[in-house]
Length: 126
Image (cartoon, rainbow, N blue to C red; front, top):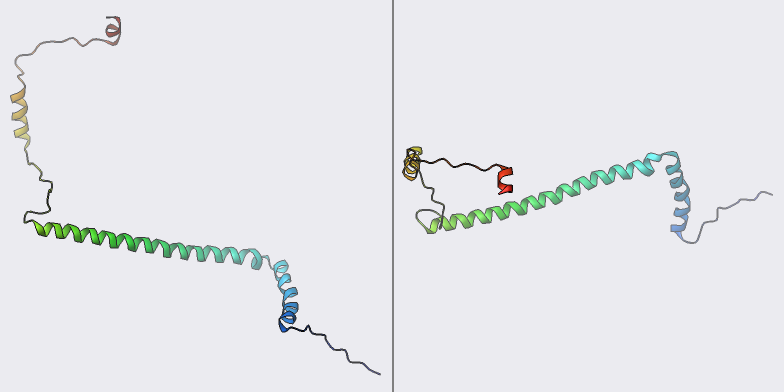
């Protein structure tokens, strides 16, 4: 007499799949350490860099919109006055000759008197 042995399957189909997949997956980590350690590390690095680039691009876009709004405000303010923005800096143009004449008017180099500059030791003793 010959007997045919049947494989006994668990009652749920997901349990059967889990028993077949689990041992082979455990062997991957032992046989190929790259799959267990290297692949997650590389994928984390790549996806992290992509995520950071998206965040930085978003902050750059926000800064650009803010600059554009400030520029529009400045242009609007310029258009309200004919000479430029209100309270704008008006530089005073002077020449070196004008400055020399003003300095000569303040000082008289023909009359002067000598004043002794005290040394450090003399200032403490007196």
